[in-house]
Amino acid sequence: MDETKFGHRDRREHYIPNKRVGYPPVFVWPVQPINALKWVFSIPGYFMPWNVFYVILGLVAWVWFSPALENFSSPSFETVSLVFLRNAGLVGAYFGAFHLRLYIQRRQDINFKFNPAWPQKDANKFMFGSQTVDNIILTFGSGVTIWTGVEIGILYLAANGFLILVSPIDQPIYFFVMIFTVHLWRDLHFYLVHRLIHCDPLYRLAHNVHHKNTNPGPWSGLAMHPVEHLLYFSCAFIYLLFPFHPAFIVIALVHAGLSPAPGHAGFERVVLQDGRAVDLDCYAHYLHHKYFECNYADGILPLDKWFGTFHDGSADSHKKMLDRLKGNRIKKT
Image 1 (tube, rainbow, N blue to C red):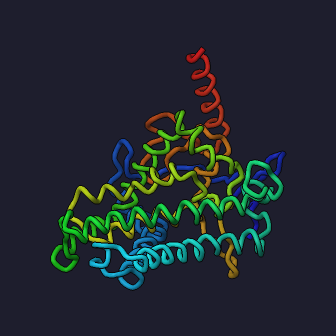
Image 2: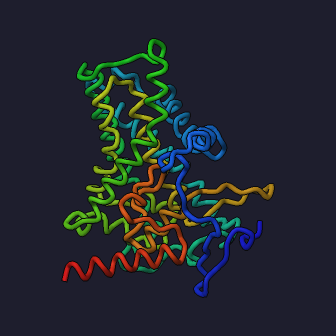
């Protein structure tokens, strides 16, 4: 597949898609109810392909690869180990698949790669000098560990009667709504947490670890400081406020734990063998890693537009961002 049909490269050979970053016709004025409904059920749209994928994977993880809820009333080493190994297996397989195809096999070379450079292998800012090794250590050592701890802690509360449990058989509509609105809640939570950790002292303490990856790859997605992991996976705490089913937590954490892989892949799309391609829809977040002070959200809610931090990849957006930053510096002085 020829990338020049979808974008171009600048003088530094950085790939710039023709398609601008945008938001679905949902939270817009004037309202567009027909277009919004079409988007919800279209492909790509709200449900397909990503949300349905993460929901199904979360359900499979709970039903077939999780200990029974009663096991969490007093978690044994075996229970904790099983949950950790399940989460580690999901991360290893999913993140590893992107890394294998795009960075080890290099099936499409730099075709659709935003930054033509490959991950750094001799940089002092990364553990052992390697961006990939550094990212993998942080992903499993901190990310999967804290993900597992949050999951076990919440299921401990459920197993000991601190939460009101519901049945998907008795309340199927409520169950369906809760598992398919996870993306909306996570989008709002991510934006709020992301803006928070861009402020000192949290940026210097934690978030700068993630931003070492100015040219991110799949493993950069969960390469964070433990403090940031705690804030990031706290998205699951919202379910403590509602009638509860364990699948809510597993799905929310699977969504949070796995979605950073395509979001940080560093490629606009993955080219398949039959000549088709999967659009990863990750340009907005790549621009955040590249320019730092834009696109704090990365999803459905147009929060960056509402709060003036939106960058759609165009020269006009870039100028607005520079003017905004210049104005902020003047105010501070």
